[in-house]
Image 1 (cartoon, helix red, strand yellow):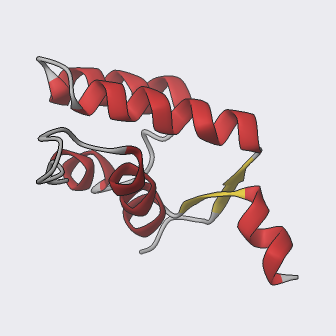
Image 2 (cartoon, rainbow, N blue to C red):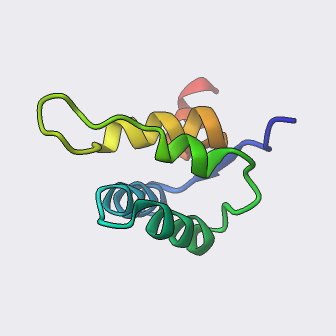
Length: 89
């Protein structure tokens, strides 16, 4: 069952992306990402943590970037910025 769509305001969405990106690039990505998902209130998204941990680093920088986290959060967690809902209307 796909999780319910969640739309976050711009500031909250940027913060979640920034913190998850930091967590995935940390020395303990599983622990840090789990904590960040808990803080953001997304522990009820089955498979989201595993999907985030499977994100591949950029071949250019060698680090996981914001864009990859945004795609994963949307596709695996059904979490989106409110701006895309506004654009579709």
